[in-house]
Image 1 (cartoon, rainbow, N blue to C red):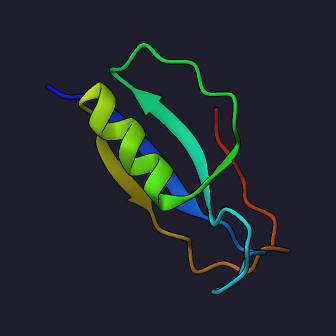
Image 2 (spheres, rainbow, N blue to C red):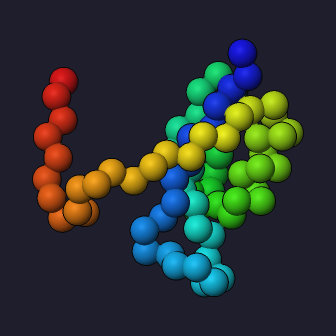
Length: 73
């Protein structure tokens, strides 16, 4: 089973800005250290191809960002 790289689109970066638009969230099944938090899509694709991992885009939820979310242990 290939490893997976989970990423999501950043909220504060819009289309056409010169900033990396994606945030790396998690890595499974691949022994790798990542030093950058914000990456461009091309960079994510190159990393995934080099280590044989699959890219998984995480979708944003329907809740507003100011709402509190309860997390159960």
